[in-house]
Image (tube, rainbow over all chains, first blue to last red; front, top):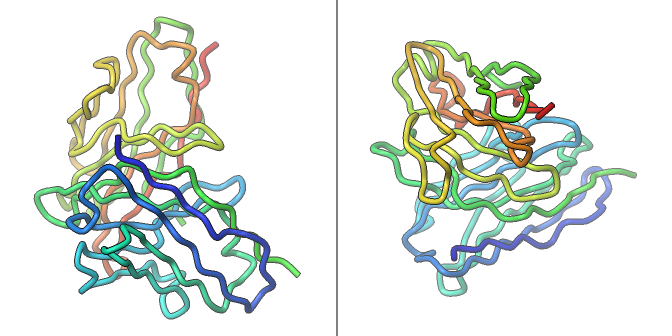
Length: 123
Length: 112
């Protein structure tokens, strides 16, 4: 069955950087759009970023635009999230998720999801 | 800052029916975008329950049903079971936020 496994989370100081990785298996990764979604402690889910199947287009939430970068290596079936200028409010569990294909891109859903990796931004 | 509003909690006895509302605006659900629903147990991967407002992925019991009307959507769970106790989130797209996928505020379902 389709599987996503995130890694790379940890403790980082404010202003620091971290790169998350997501390993995909059991589906056609090079043909799949991919997302990052996060959940801060005690809060709800927040969409972070999306990348098209071929990496030609990327989209970001306003809260991370200019600081985070989503990219992929289709030859390795891996998705990445480069996070720079981290803030305390970026503390969250970060999930990668495969994009389900709606009639239009705006109708896409998230399935499956990984188990998540925890990022803590604190001094 | 969720733009889709859900009740913080709903509860019901085993076997009962509960519904979770998801209220949006003319910029998201009311603009015609699909609504999707997820079940989330803390510490686990969220699970897709409903996609395209009314469709169930294979493996999701038919006890779960989605609907959409105007600027709102709903998830109904019939024949409530203990294993249904979890957090539930709706999700759609909002064209007013530089184009952004948005989630609901989340609803905790408690089985009494």
